[in-house]
Amino acid sequence: AVTAAANNESYYDTAERITVSIKEAFTALDIEWDVFVEPRPSEHYSALTKDILATLVDRGFVYARRGLVHRRPSDGALLFEAQVAGRCPRCEAAASANDCENCGRFHDDGETVDGRCARSGEALELVSLDRYYLRLEALRPALVAFRSRAVMSPQMQSRIDGVLADPLPEVGITHIADYGIPGGVPGVEQQRINSYFEHAGRLLTAVQQLADTASNSGQ
Image (cartoon, rainbow, N blue to C red; front, side):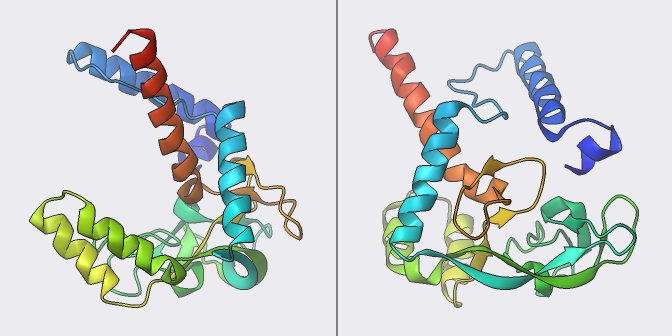
């Protein structure tokens, strides 16, 4: 979103341009890929993601509540994810609104230290917004079971065990933006599903595409 705004492009136009560059680089390096899910959501991908959301809402793992988000005082725009630059409340490293690449831990928008507009550097203010949250702690049994089955490096095991040692957070999964899949959930109809939650539908779409490719090739 930040790159798109800087180039005066739509989010998806920028994402598609970057996708083309990635594919060209892979081709130049003679790297083959099995599946490449395009950035602009397809009808199937959108429907699948909304179905996952509706199922988790029905089961109580996703619910609506009021939380803190960032607003730019100069024009009142609400900013999310990489649109916000600040510091991680846990390790103090540079971080976005809710993600730290240094320690790998999630933090809520309202926990970000010294949040500023990633483009202009303008200091942001925190305001309340009703949105949908994913209750990861309620999913702890499933996550622990997955951790016990998954094959991963010792470093990744240590990282995941460190996360599981603490109470798991509630992750905001809807936002107000011109990108993302329209959620269509009561109370927040104007919001869209953010990129964090889209990953579930994106991965399942990739698995389906891989299965279709294998079936068509007779494998």
